[in-house]
Length: 258
Image (cartoon, rainbow, N blue to C red; front, side, top):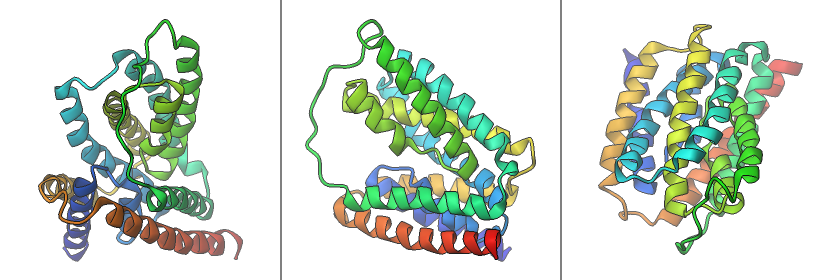
């Protein structure tokens, strides 16, 4: 019961933060899951399931608004989904210590990215077309596969690694890129979670408690947007992730080498 209450509370709080800044914040939720589940492999599977539920809310909103590029979604998405499934399915082959080090490395990257984020001016750019950008989409899709594998292994959707490719390489409109990215991320999380489920790498109690609480928290947080400056929140979250990552890497090294 204590485990259930703690997991739900953490999920709710992270959901509020995510709703306030418009992000899933899977990177922040991952160490929170580790706080209530001792096994890194079960953590990865459970966190991926929770993040998938959280991403569903955002993906549904973008789909309803029509902010999806169907061609990029199907082409780049299919590579990402296969990669996520393979990453989740073969996660068990990685020693717990190495997995913790991998998780820590990804969290450091996410933390630094959030900490350094600056307010950006929105601008429209040409949306990708099938004919003009076909070669670029193929290259971007292979990157999507790599991101899918890594995300499936460590328990994250890693949309922050796909979005820059959509914006800079595929020249997509930022709004369309955001909608397409989060929708690809939802299905990537789902396929990766299935890979973990086939090996039983998930905790159903934590999944249901944190997943449902995260969705409620995201709804509440969306209505609190603007209460705290976005830049301040992002820096605080980024710094927190870096500190947690250092702890996880240290623990991973002790498990693996000592």
